[in-house]
Length: 395
Ligand SMILES: Nc1ncnc2c1ncn2[C@@H]1O[C@H](COP(=O)(O)OP(=O)(O)OP(=O)(O)O)[C@@H](O)[C@H]1O
Ligand SMILES: [Mg+2]
Image (cartoon, rainbow, N blue to C red; front, side, top):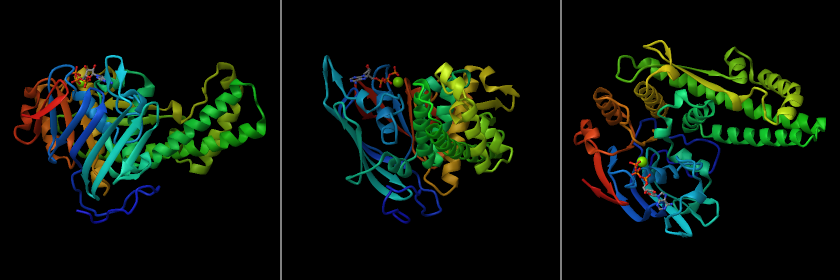
C-alpha cells in the first residue's frame, strides 16, 4: 500500500501517514562483498526469519548487513570501512547491501555501501539519501549477545542501547545527540588546550545546553511511553521493568523545570565546571552524556544488574518488544527487530513466549541461533533459513 507515502524522507519531519499498522518487512536482500558474503540474493516473505547454522556460518553477518540499512556504524559498531569482504590478504574494494522493503508507507528500494576507505553512501529508490532518511522509512531495534548482560555492564553501553530505542521513535534525537557530542568535544578540546576565551566558551556551552536539553526531553518522552506500554502488559513471561533516567538534566526536567530554565541551569553547571573539566581532561560536568538508565525487575523488586543472566535477557527483550509496540501504536512504522542469538539464556517457557510476542508484533523479526530446534515454538509461522559457509537455503 502506498497511502500516506511521503514524497521525500530527506526532511526533518517524520512521515505522517495512514493510521493503521502494516508490517515492515525486508522482501528481498542482496549482499555484495559484505563480510563473508561475496554475493547473496534472498527473497523473503513478511513472516519472522530464523537463521540457523553452525558457529561461523554467517548468521550474524547477515543481521549486521541489515543493520547497515539504518544510520550509524552497524550492529557491531564496525563502521562502513570495517565490513568489506576479506579473502586471505585481499580485501574487496567496495561492498553493498541492497534491499526491497515493504512498510506501511509503501515499498522502497534501499541501498547502502562504501568504497575502499570511503564513507558510506545511501540510496533510496536509486536517489542519494541521508542516513536519517533511512531511519524514517525503516526504524530498527537490535539486540546483540554482548547486550545480554547490559544491565550489569558499563553505564555508557546501557545509555547507547536506550538512545537507539529513542532514535527508533524519534529520528531527530539522533541529530540532537550528534550535535551535542560535537559541541561537547569542541568545548573539551578548548579546555584541554588552555584556550579559555570566555566569550567563545560561553557560546559553546549555551549551544551544548540547548542540544542537551533537547536530548533529555526526547529521552524522557520516550521513557514515559515505553514505561506506560510495559505497565499495560502484566502477567506475560517477560518481566516488567521499572525504568528511570538518572541524569542532571533529565532529573531537572522530570521535576518540572521548563526547557529554557533547564538550559540555563545546565549552561551554568558547565561554566562552573570549566576548571575541573580542564584539569581532569574529561567532561565531568553532569550532562546527558553521563546519564544512567536505571532498571529494576518489578516482580522481584530487584535491581536489573542483580538479576540472573536469563532474567536480564528477558528484561532487555521486554524493553525491545515494548518499544516495538509503542512505535507501531503511535501511528509510525513498526520497527524491524534483529535479535542475534535470540534464544540464548532463555528457558523453554520464555522461548515460547518470545515466539508468541514476535508472531503478534506488527513487523518482521530476524533471529539467529545455532539450532533450529531452539525455534520450534514458531512451528510453521516463521521462515527457516539454514546458513552454511556463507550460503543460505530455505529449510
Ligand atoms: N570482512 C570479512 N570477510 C570475510 N569473512 C569475514 C569477515 N568478517 C568476518 N568474517 C567471517 O565470517 C564468518 C561468519 O561470521 P558470523 O559472525 O556471521 O558467524 P555466525 O554464524 O554468527 O557464528 P556464531 O554462531 O559463532 O555466532 C566467520 O568465520 C568470520 O570470521
Ligand atoms: Mg553469530
